[in-house]
Length: 413
Image (cartoon, rainbow, N blue to C red; front, top):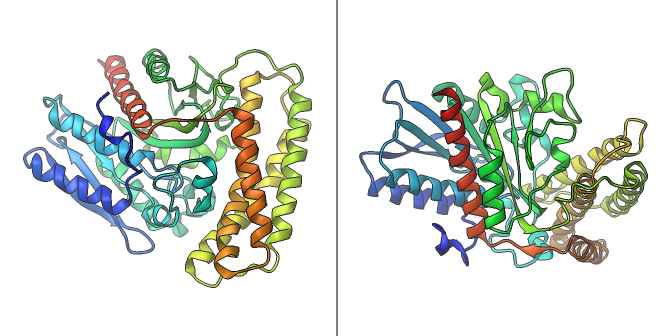
């Protein structure tokens, strides 16, 4: 495995990514360059590391890391990918790596070396949708887009990449790939990599509910007018900016072998109603404890915005699960993915609220601590969670990115 040194290392922070990128640029001055593509709302630099490219007539590939603050594996992956392509002969493709799309969020999510799901949530942060660089265009008018989004779309406009890859991670589950258009042949190397690395393939990912699946764990965005849940928003995200081919590569921090069962679920509608009821009850408990917790500083304000946005989102989610549009036929894997999705929504809201309450010595803190501790334990036990080493996550993402590039080259040869 090419990244064995990462096995016991923490996920790199934004400043560590920049330092490592500078070292690589100094090592390969003729091929590698580091530049600033913009600034975050908090004034932090948005760094782009490029290997080759822009020579005229070649292909450009853009790889985006850190679009979600709580999904830190992408930073380690882009460094490893950059090292590999820098050391390889020039194949005519320019590789461009946005090291961290949301450095402000990454600084607030302070779990660089989580030893358990509970440890991961002790310093958890995930910004509300309108503050996420990739999703902001689907939720905000053009004039209100954050600078991180403008930097990303500016890069896409400048590079006009034939392939954009967004590196994501899930807390607990399996691996899957979402595509804005099909890449024939990707399912085979993706599945082979997952099997070799003992990473389960999530065959019923709730993020791609209703999307066509040309192979296990591969989901292709449907045509407009036949989209599944949240698909209109997806088409307005940066994934579809300039209609480039985009692959979103998900890999788990903790794996569960329960997310790849293709057997039909005996009662999906009944299961979804039960999951909706549980999520609504958990959200009500968090909302009750939210009363009286105020923002004493900018970090607390950011955390509470995320808590409130999550709590507002949950009724829409539960209505879809329990309403007349709920699927009457689904696999065991798909219902399991929905189960995991619901658990993480209430858990994240409680975890972020706990951070604020604990810092302020608020009387809600002990109650929230018990909720977060209990819910993490139940989540891990229900899905028989097992840790996936950072090196393994990175290796699988690297293999999948390179396979997507080869499939695109083969298809356009």
